Length: 94
Image (cartoon, rainbow, N blue to C red; front, top):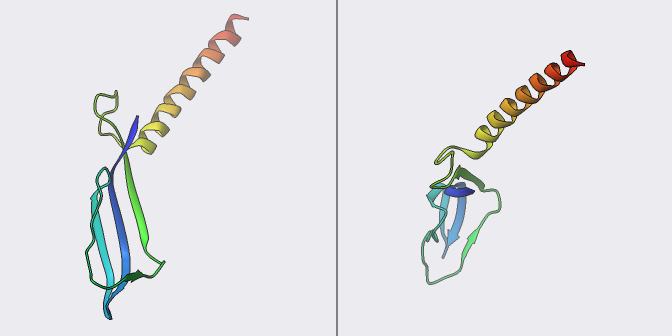
């Protein structure tokens, strides 16, 4: 079962009571709330930030801590090669 382990938000531009934060980055454990900050006034953020998420297989799985997408690509390639080999074998038997 894949789990989200790390999240990163880059290019954060925020206005906190007239003070501007520009091009900031934030990262943390995606399994827990990430508190960016607190202010007595509303915090406004521009919507041009970029979010990155790291997906890995969970603890106790066959691919523990391995990245999900590259691992699934490799598995699909191995399965495809195996199916092709079986097809060749069946064709030569007929």
